[in-house]
Image 1 (tube, helix red, strand yellow):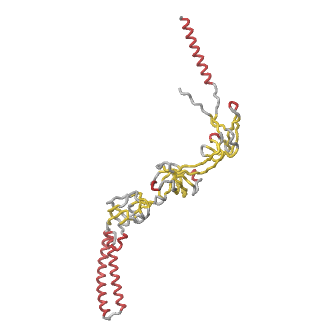
Image 2 (cartoon, one colour):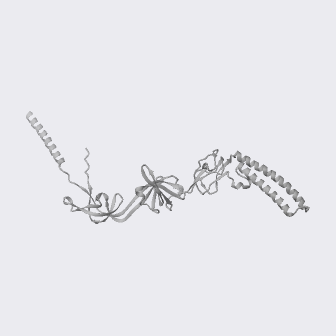
Image 3 (cartoon, rainbow, N blue to C red):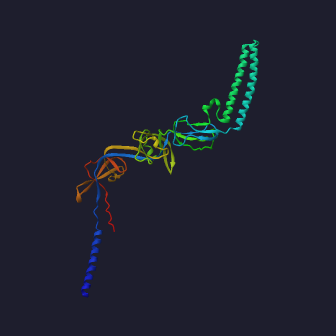
Length: 374
């Protein structure tokens, strides 16, 4: 019994040894090289680039007050449409004390002059009625009286403007009423009731009461790398993709390329601007907000209905390009290295101008066998 057990154990050891040897021998044998195969096809090849940027109105106007004062009323808010001349807010004047004193002094002086001119006029009129003075002398005194009254009116208007921001004679053109200078959409109202505001002068830009823009005239503004800017020309068509609006592409055309580069993250880039066109299928301009991030797709070159192959099937050597044409089939297949003339490439497919036909089969990259899961 013990003798049989030893024989069985020895047989098992020998079997394991032989099996291991056979497995290692098979693993050491070279595997046949298998390549991917491609057939040329006729297709469109488009080489494009993507430019990141944002959407903004072509003209955005900051509405500023004509006086310094305090905001007492705000009649509009961001998102409202306004017409040119429509009132946005109202301000209460804070008079400058020096100007106020000068205006008050001018009114007092004008009153004195009017009183004296009136006395002179009445005296001259009495003498003229009795025929003691000539008409020429009378007309001069009457004209001086009228001029004195006009000066009093002007001085009073100036005092009212300095003190109240508006005069009675020009109430419709009140500088306390802050009006929009253009027709458009209010983008922002950065002030509140009670805020102090100042008018624009040589020392400051003044307080912005509201930002108004025509949202029907939008542009795309972005930057393109110096390696690609040389291929751009004004008038080129573009496709604008706005991330915040799904399934929406806007047509645009390039209208500006900056002549000067700016450095960004160590690279030289050029600013570009494109005018956006709205069509019947596009969303209304009201649905597009100023400052939306967007991508512009620019077609740099295109070739329509040309013979193309995957670029991975082409071997480049210096200024020459080659493909391997498959001749035969199965284990007897051979590969003929054939020179070709290439054209436009989009990074995936490349145009073949000559050297092969649509009936040829081409060798591609070597297939890599998937490893078996342990």
